[in-house]
Structure formats: structure tokens, C-alpha cells
Length: 182
Image (cartoon, rainbow, N blue to C red; front, side, top):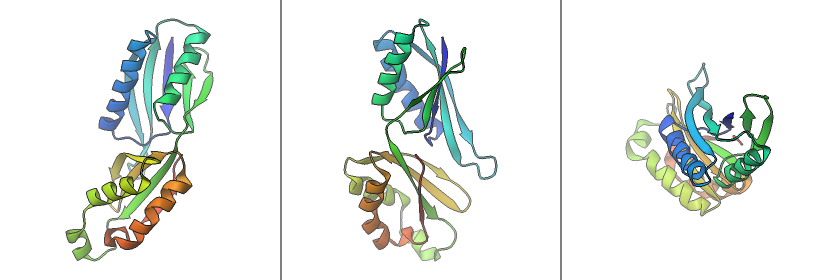
């Protein structure tokens, strides 16, 4: 049985591959099937990541197998708004438990000395540290004017509250924006 896991998750292909590998290990361990492919959908205007897909082939066409797969998917830390689509019947099953936060760093409007003296990797480290287990960094996107950092966790509101003191204090975070993405 062919299924597509449509992820409300903004992942670079290299980060999506890690999730595919994790899902493949689970499918093999549970003797349910295998991952057969995947893809990343980009916004045609900006090139920003919109979502990802992972194709799955289940060994047997049984309702119990699909229900078990849904349970397993919900354990591997994916965001709300994701769906499991059965290709034969076009049935969609809602999956996912996490909320998402996108932090957009302004890449054009700050003084040059800020870009020269600050590091986006420091931003990732400090934000993940501030989230202290309630959220984690998953991926990023670099555009012409913005760099997006994607975090997923138990609560968008809590993640945002935890990073606000750092954002207020670090020069590279000036003129940033934060959006809920799941």
C-alpha cells in the first residue's frame, strides 16, 4: 500500500533525509514497510521551503498497519498540520503533535558591522539553549533578504517567550520577525 506523509515541516533536503532514515529504521523494526522516496516543496516566488513529503510503502494493506504507523509517526516529533495520505483511497489522516516557530533574520537592513561581528550560528545555539527542551532547531533557509531558522516544539507561545530576552539583546536580531508555522 502506497502512502505519502505530507509534513508541515520546513526542512532542507539534507535534514529531511535524516527524518527519512529515522522513519525507515522504525518501519524495518516494526516490519511494516519501507521509505521509498521524498521531496521538498518550495515557494515559487521566494524559494523558501513550504513542506516536505516522504513516500512510504506498507507491506500489507491492513487498517491495523495504518493505525500502528500513525502511532509511530506521532512519536517521531513532527508538527501539527501534517497528514498521512493513502494513495489508493485518497483518505487523509491528520498526524503530528508539535508547533513550529520560524525566526527570520533581516539580511539587508542592518549596519555592515553587525553582519561582520555577529554569527547566525550563535543565534541558533542561544535560541535552542533558551528553549531548554521545549523546542529544537530543525532546519534553515537562506534567501536574498532573510535567513529563516525553523524550530519545532511543544508550544509556539512558550518557545517565543523563552527566546525574547536573547532577541532583545543580540544585535543581529534587530528587525527580525517571528511567525508561527505549525
